[in-house]
Image 1: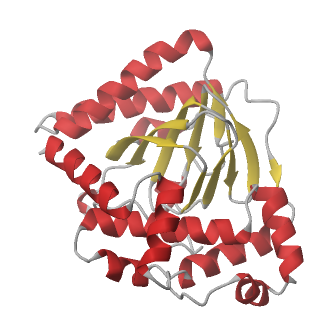
Image 2: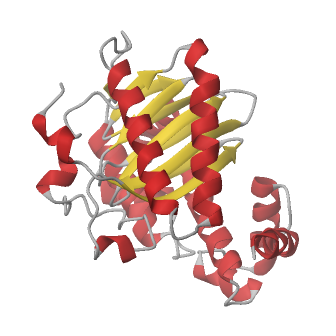
Length: 297
């Protein structure tokens, strides 16, 4: 496993966060590496169509442009410690603030040297005795990222290297369950891409999605429910709510405009759906996010 190129890596940490979610988390496609540690809960991770059942203590390392779907499967909230990084520092890429790539674009745009971890098994398990120290290191990384001073990149780079070491060392004894390709994944992936492309259309429904994929409505619904644990409609609604949350945080549009932008036929339906999903009305969610932003300033 250990190659000469490991002597030349110089990680650049782009973001760090702690994510807590109660239900379906959704799909992402990122242009950089994503390191995730499961602090609490259980979930199904679909990485490039391969399903991994993860639990507390698991670490996941996703290479650039690896599509990943996360579906929480436990009664307690799923808590993830997450940071994004480039394997090699590049001055131009260091100025990129976002981590998200375009969902639906499966072409790999990462350089060859950024894909040097693509061949590893993307999951490892951290033994109980090592978790306290690991979490301390992550929380230090998280704090340093938020505080951000001129010397922060040195410490962030050092901690990232430590975490990569811990992950790769754990690969000496990988989990016996390596995951398996999800049945019907090409159809599921095609449906997910179509939903991400067309969620803003209020007329989008199961029939249109099924027609695009080339399956009957009942068959596509069966695949979603069996493999992802949710219905097609629930996934569509989830994506609309997540996009609404992002627009609310941006604060550039009214709630009515946001409702229309994300595919709801009216503000009342939007408000009901948002509260059912998030537990807060859109206006209260906006106020809560504003308070968080002000605390960071």
